[in-house]
Image (cartoon, rainbow, N blue to C red; front, side, top):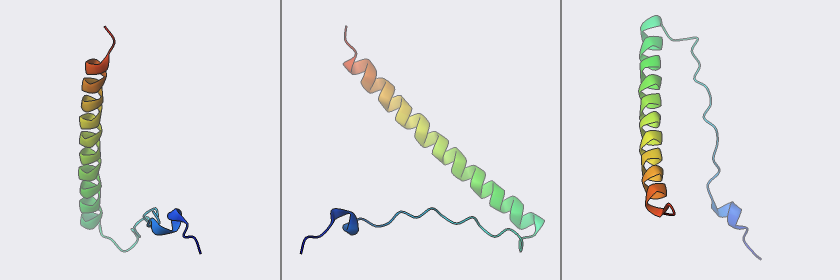
Amino acid sequence: MAIDPEELEPKKTKPQPRDLEGLGVAELQDYIAGLEAEIARARAAIAKKQDHRSGAEAFFRKR
């Protein structure tokens, strides 16, 4: 019996939105601060990857 390679890879599931109904104002502000920090981290990762790509493109650019 053959094994499908896709069965070996873990399933990627989209995270479920957090229930905000039970949170107070301070908790919501902390939640937003955490999300903004994660957004900043993602933007920094994007900038780093773009810098690496630009460097590679400049290196391999035809002269």
